[in-house]
Each structure stands twice: as structure tokens, then as C-alpha cells.
Length: 191
Image (cartoon, rainbow, N blue to C red):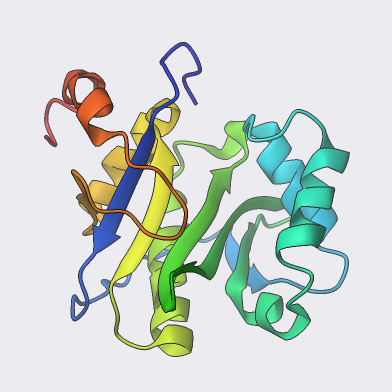
């Protein structure tokens, strides 16, 4: 994350009906789903990338937002483990409500800094899309991100998401009009 940039909300959407390419994880890594107690691992990963200042803060967030849906988290919170069994990345296949409409959405993509650049994020996004297809059906998929995560925005663009100029979902703001110059500067080859 580049916190030297202004924090501006970015909304992205992937259209329904798009195929989900298969993207292999490097051999020394594997996917695993949430098991009881894994909120600590989730919190450690999210704190390592600067999403939270303290692990306890992240654990409390997870408990309040996700643990109230115990059956859902077991199939929707995805991790990547390394060959030693260490949890090193995560993403969540979730939803947000826009009035009465339930929007499938991606939450909290994070890869521990020492594992970034190893080709883990794209397979993680595709795995999340597979879970959303299975759990939510073939629908549009949304995500909220921010200018601080412009590298992730580049990844999302490469995986079929589009930047939304005015539309939003859930309760998120869309600051595209204020962020466009920053994104054009940082994502020249994708914009």
C-alpha cells in the first residue's frame, strides 16, 4: 500500500457470465479454507500489509463482521499456505447489501509483504471468483478498494474487473472523479 497517496474510494465490478481462467499457484503453496480459530491468522496477514495497526484490532473486526456467519466463513474465507504450513495470504468471497439487493463482493485481498511478487494474488482472486460463482451464482461481482492499493487495482483490471465512474454498491462511496488522475498516473499501461 502506498499511504503517501490520498485515500480515495474506488469501486470495481466484474460482469456476470465471464469465464474464470484457471491460474495455478506455484508448487510450494496451497489453498485452504477457514477453520475455527483462523481469525488470528487472517488478522496477522491483514495487519502485516497495513490494513490494521494491531492484530487485536483486526481480530475484533473479523469477529464483528464475519464470525456472526459461522457456516458462511468456512467456505468463503480463503487462505494460501506455504510448504511449511504458514498462512501467508487471504481473500474473502462475501457480499454487501445495496438496499434489498445482495451483491457478491470480494473483501480483504492481502499477501504478506515477504511473499508479494511470487504470483499468488491472481490465483487467489480467481479462487475467490470460483467460490462466489458456487455460493452466489453467476452474478456481477463488486469490490471496494482505494487509491493506496493501486497495484491491486492493476491486478483487478487484469482479472476482468472494470473501474466504475459513478456506480457503487453497499454503503461505499465512489471517488473515481477525484482519483482518476492518480490512477492514470500509476496505471499508465492499463488505463
